[in-house]
Image 1 (tube, one colour):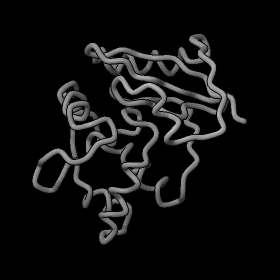
Image 2 (image 1 turned 30 degrees about the vertical axis):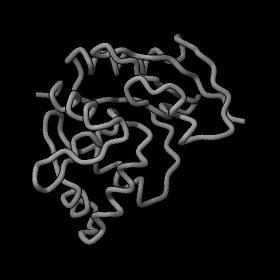
Image 3 (image 1 turned 120 degrees about the vertical axis):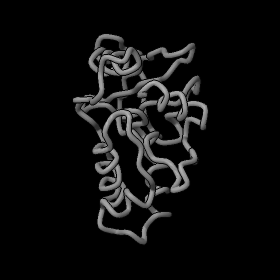
Length: 160
């Protein structure tokens, strides 16, 4: 059983759960979704630990305060090679900008994998830090987001 540390950050009257292991940031939750981590990870022991979580919660709070545009945190990511490639591409999308699913597929040199890219984005455990909210439909419309379209819109608005 893996020990996971937990704390929360608040933004715009919402609570966001944040989890890390000894190796790094493991999961960032959606607005007001307690225990969402269990849909991604099993056999974990969660301990609330504000001190161990401080580097992670501080950077997220700085982001929500408009003081941080990129993150420089250790990440604990266990993913397929394809998902890892997609998530790395997401991290190249600049703050305040958006791109499309097909653009991400092009960036990873797999232009026909748009649906697979969308699936990988949906499995991103590090929402906000790995900024999947910056990916929109080709028509400019917001598309699916683990935290819901309201959360996606609020993050995009924050970055404007």
